[in-house]
Length: 169
Image (cartoon, rainbow, N blue to C red; front, side):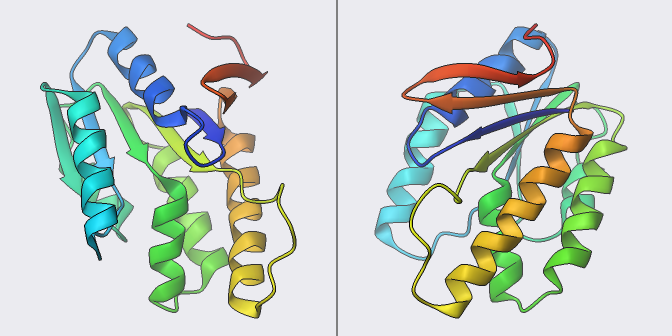
């Protein structure tokens, strides 16, 4: 399992997509975003255009096991992103620690190579409301769990990857 972490608009998704393409096999994409407005619709369209053809895409905002079950014939799967997945769980009022543990376990035991994208949300100011603080803490814990399981962990800043753990292929 590989983990690509970065801030918003850092280039993390593009870098993760390059890792998938470098693998050379069949490519899967689990999209966790939910499109609620025109801005998000435009962002999803940009990501789809950047990826191009040749990807089996499954849109699944909550159930990672169901998404993985649809990708049995795929060699490498990109999950983009853990941050939106966790946001969806928060809005669904799930037990964030429990679902995070399940999320990491499902991905860590998948037979395919998994590449997970996530946002680093802990480097800014302390949020002024309880929901945002709850999310920030849960995202930090989820990122730590993913990083602990990952063979490769990379942070991307300004489009530049920096290896935190492992060796780039």
